[in-house]
Length: 570
Ligand SMILES: Cc1cc2nc3c(=O)[nH]c(=O)nc-3n(C[C@H](O)[C@H](O)[C@H](O)COP(=O)(O)OP(=O)(O)OC[C@H]3O[C@@H](n4cnc5c(N)ncnc54)[C@H](O)[C@@H]3O)c2cc1C
Image (cartoon, protein in one colour):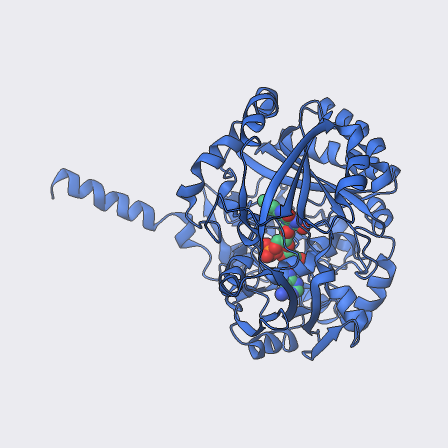
């Protein structure tokens, strides 16, 4: 055999005998968010195309059931361990469209990009959507999203929905019919049921012109009150608060116009290459110098230009414009909501925390929302300014720990002025902060108990804040030559049958021995890891509860007496 051939044969053999291939006959799928912050092992993934498939999956499954849209939420709102994960992205048809009534009914796995493609030829626009159009309608409704439309929360533009409840029933919900389901499923983060249909109000796709004004941040609330609020020509509005000083604001308003278009495209290009320039420009804003260049040089030049575009073009940007996370760094969002008359009190607190912690802000945008007294988990119970932070974070434990330490301070700062914070991002808020920020959560819990009595619909957000904690998931590993430690396994099965534990994974098939050490696929990871630092007794059997190796004492609290395994007749 020639040397090179032998080399490739060896490589082939090596690759085929990597642990990835030799363990895991029962390897489970891993679901993660777009920023890959929350990889989670699930039981199974289903990709429904018909509503009957969703009904079947929900009805015949004791749970947990998690629901995923485009997966842009960043704190595990789409998934939990051992879930049946419903991937909604193929459930994406337009069901009914009435240009005359300006209404569209969709399957909620549809992205706004696809919906825009459908309605734009009829010169119609969504009444409210986010700044980016890559999200699904279901994901947007479930977080009660908002964009730069000064009206605020998307719920005001939703006419009705249909929801599959835990028992498999499909119910219609609107302000008139089953209103409690309407108000809890919108903004309910997949906790009440699966939204399987949504009817949205549309508006005219008109030409809009950009205007901008620089001012001291302290003047902004008065400027908004005088020139933007109640101004019927305003279509989109936000303001940029420039880092790292957080003292100057650029208010940007898009108003109705009859002037000729300067951008004739109807919709944004979906080709990432067309956004390379913008992406690079955003990346250069990382760090203090980049922000100063933006504030003093780039933005003044850019905003001098006269821009007239279609509403659908400007309202619906694409994520391809934004820098891409990689192994070193990731890009994260956070959002705080404060009553309009408290913005000037909040900004100095925000400034202090961001500066002290050297947070690498790329963009800080202020938006407006009218009161939403419909959604039970409303983030704008009063007229609100929202402050959206977009920052870069290194993929290191140190950076994660730092963010986990300064984020709760920002939440406290918002709560101290009567504000709240947004839930689709990382779950750094304590239960106390969550309960303070969402004072009607009790009502939501009562409804969920009624609509989802077995707490089927779960994800990491609800696992953290829903008071009825899920019973622990036990991960069980028995070394191959012991036959799996039948006594412990029996006990675990018994506990599972009594519903004292959520269930168990037998990782028996996902372990191999390497250098005399047992290596297993740990929950939440696809990597094979050695199980070290265990004493001899513990090494006989490895048991994980909620992803952590538990001491014998802790296990005995769960009723698992590992010492019984001495009776194992192997
Ligand atoms: C770069 C970036 C920009 C953003 N900009 C904005 C913005 O301008 N405004 C804003 O409000 N938010 C914004 N967000 C947050 C984003 O809107 C939310 O994460 C939104 O939910 C994303 O939609 P999705 O399809 O990705 O939902 P997912 O992340 O997939 O799901 C979000 C939640 O909805 C639930 N869900 C999804 N589909 C259904 C369904 N059919 N039935 C029941 N529950 C369901 C999921 O279980 C989960 O709890 C931004 C996020 C990023 C990363």
